[in-house]
Image 1 (cartoon, one colour):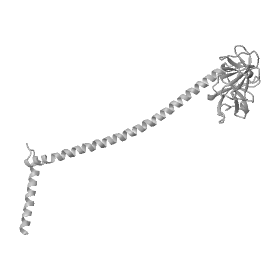
Image 2: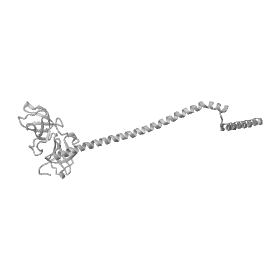
Image 3: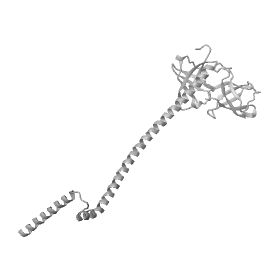
Image 4: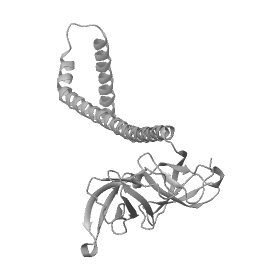
Length: 274
């Protein structure tokens, strides 16, 4: 055992001397590598190549994942911006449409020979969209029950109920409504009522046996009643059909006013008002 211990110590000493010699030799500038260095490099080169490839692959994967995360964040940001821009475009379109309506309403009021009060539609009958509307003018503004309501396109209806600051308007296309009208070309008197069978249209009934109405004829208010001034457009005849027993006829009239998109209207004041 003592003999083996001495050889072990001697081997360790020789290994240390060899290692020190290698360190000394490799630390000095040399023209070429030693045999052992070349052998170690050749032996370790496949391992180094493999490690380099794995390192590059892992680095590329990490870089790709980082880029993918960045792209996802960028895509989410762009989607939010798109929604925001679409909302802004819609708001600008609405503002432009409202400005056009206001400009048209102002021009109509300035050129009209009637005393008019502008009002905005602020509510509709949820059970019957084409029956009544609520406007933001009432008794405090001089509005009274029975006053006519119009737009630059034509007849809208009659004020049915009034509160201090609002009014309910019975639309002219409601079956309860009736307007005294006349055929533009002939001046023949006719009765215009809301069509119960075809919502959004009028029914025309002649008041004179000799009245002749044809598709394309324009119907205006006759002015025979105190509610509507004379000459306000009502609509255009689109169809004429015989009545019962062929003793007369009825006609279908399409309104000039778009009742589904009412925004601004005018209340017509009587001469003694306002």
